[in-house]
Image (tube, rainbow, N blue to C red; front, top):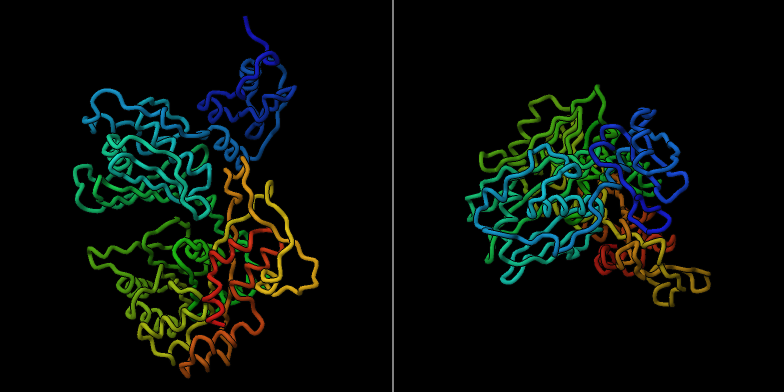
Length: 504
């Protein structure tokens, strides 16, 4: 006899994943009366009858656009959490080949019915990383345990600790998925996994590194949908965005994006290329590695083992009649000189440099050996950026800043100002933050700045002119603090206020 749902508080009702994906139906709200069922466009009548049978009651159909349906499909069927107790090895763990077999390379992780503990663990880790917007999965072997950490909003958080005896099994499984050599444990290896998760494809970049107690594995999650490769979606201040777009319309010159690793430089460059991408232009890139495939753009990955460095790749693509060139990073004087020569011969060159500020990019190139008179005539714009964590809107705590905080942000002592601090709740996993937002500073070359660069002016003198009207990174961050988007401590952590003061 069937128990009525009102008598027993049960988990939300779900259709079988394969049926939901194929027939285009998902249960959005099983607690409502009638039950709300989402449909990919106009539903199949027979599928509706089956859904009504599963929920054992009346239903109402909510027709959804395909993109919205696929997104909800992934959210509903993604793994809800990971528990170490779910993944206990039984029998002989030495047969790595047997334990490592499982998923075909195009498998949909949400549709996997394989109960092999190791396979379920890897699937759960990747699904959890995508669900929580993690950028990296760290699998770290130690003497007594295997630690698994996720980098969420730029901060590592441990999600799982397993017995050390599972280390070789986990590493071998990841290597099989990434098509790496299982037997080679002495050298670092790099690979890639392309997987389906619900209705979208996610690329996972895999790096292994020999360590004392086994091989460390880092998996970088490359979710093109989450990256939002669109300048309008990056959260730039409107003035900065418009000035940056104007710089991108130049027929030639060098445009640089600067910042530390993980500050979103590559995403900004991809968004710029997406804006410029049209059939009238030949756009070519040299990257390490190619993170997102963009239709209409020729992308080349460097391979130093065979001599294909940034400099060699840039020389080669300049013989391919490009209009716009993107170099993943300027690391040496050779690449810098070729990029400068390319801009002098009529190309628009986009690249990144690892510096702490926008004007610091000029001095860094100068220190590499680039001639000041060439830099002054080729640099069109430099964008510096950081990512700060957004405060959780559910639990953030408002308070009035004290005199020192007001002075730091340049706020009048008499102004009625309220800012917010993180607290922590269930929604944000007790961190107080949810998601990230960019802070930016943009320097666009003008006649005075070109003269200063030509005359070998110092960084402070360049900054004094560049930010007479524009915001620095710190000032942009303080504006987010005053708007309630992030906290003052978070901005100071990321922007490094003492360096900004030294440069202005």
